[in-house]
Image (cartoon, rainbow, N blue to C red; front, side):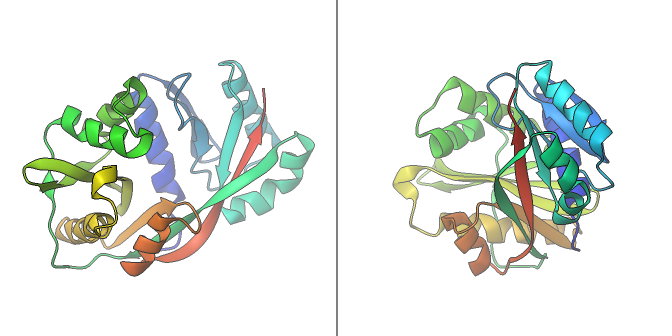
Length: 240
């Protein structure tokens, strides 16, 4: 499987809905607004001929809410609309690597975390270094069930690492990997990855993927767990 853009569109649609936000369908994907302070506001999952009219709709959608317009594009979509991006004042700001592998019955299992607040606390500590309102809000939205299975690892009865497995359109998405700082460097993210690969297999999902920052520790862990980069999703921004 080499195209996970429909999965990205569905994630943005569900995340916007779970947050009580707003979204529009555009270019086969979704532009989502999950709140003024949300770090996930963007247009994702476009998988067709994204033209100037669709880009203008994205600019209007985010501009009406006082936000910069961010679009995240697969390479074949970027190639089609590059001229329009330049003419409309979008600037390239980076990219993320989409990595994938087939699921497999690996010898690793994870606990399902039923307590959304407990799971949110681990993600807040992992990503923000503290338990704060934004981290808890994002974690609770992710843990409400609409975005996937909340899974984790306990040590001495304490939840110390967590991640999510979402299944959309027959593809699995591994997201939200987080380990509390005191427990880093002990191979817990690799256990999270292997456990979700195995859970996807158990759920009958053939292909799994993740979105990672290039040359990050997360990317190295995914490589160690048999994932390979398949394409770079490029990010563009047009400031308000």
